Length: 386
Image: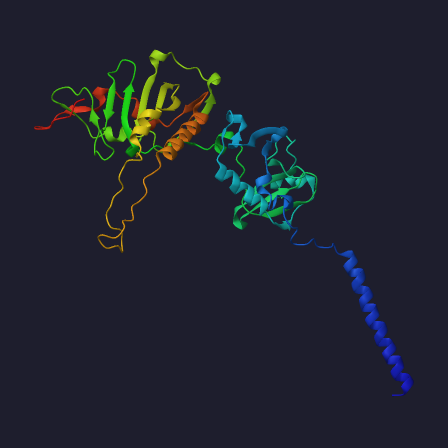
């Protein structure tokens, strides 16, 4: 092959390569450009700023407010439920999931297909999703939360100002009922703390149970008739305030309260002299109650360790008799009394001006008279009276 022929071959090869490149460029121009798989975070401004959020509003169909959560000095409140405390743990879990909601995969930009993902604008009458509105950041944050993809542990979302919808990391089940955002723990006073219980109901004989010391195994029944003794249910009555969760909560103005003479009344006193008073009634198949808390500082102080109490002088582990004793410091009476005052304050913030729907079993524990807890005395059994 001559030098001229070689140059011709090389020239043809270069032309062929160039032709291929041009063809590929044209072909790629005809194909739609695929969108990136990842797109950052659904609410990047929320990351590292959870504690700055001051309000969360959940909007539903026809742009109606479903739930309003407001952060105040004492914590989060549910505005639709008379400003009652919200479940802070549940709320924070939602915020963390939102902050971690990484955009995994772009979905439709077609408005007509939004409904299939539940990400249409909430102005729509039949909107399937909800819109979250968060205040407290430099700029208000908004996000439409649609259907959950349980198989992938993800949720369909869309920013209201954008057409692009996404599949985002994390399962976001946004509750639409204000009741489900409440902190339902009403009281949690264990039975071991209860010293005395007084129960009365219309037309029934009052019932009074008491213990002299916390370590007493059973309660005594006041005014016990001859030949009768208390049945095994009385100890359970002291657990009424333990793990008491509300069913619902209302402002007093929203509930028709029966006359005083038609109410159940219950009083629970603890060994440290916290007193919880309850008025309860049954209406339309639901059980309602009002609560109040108070503390008698003098008796409470008398039950607390005094400065003159002598701590145990038993030798500590590793010490020989005659060496300085390692006594456990007695609780400071002033601190204990301060803690009790704070407990009363906290309880009354929840109780004041409100009526609660409570579980039937807790109501049943208060709906007792003396005759309800008696049985024939076993031979040789004697009941202490007071």
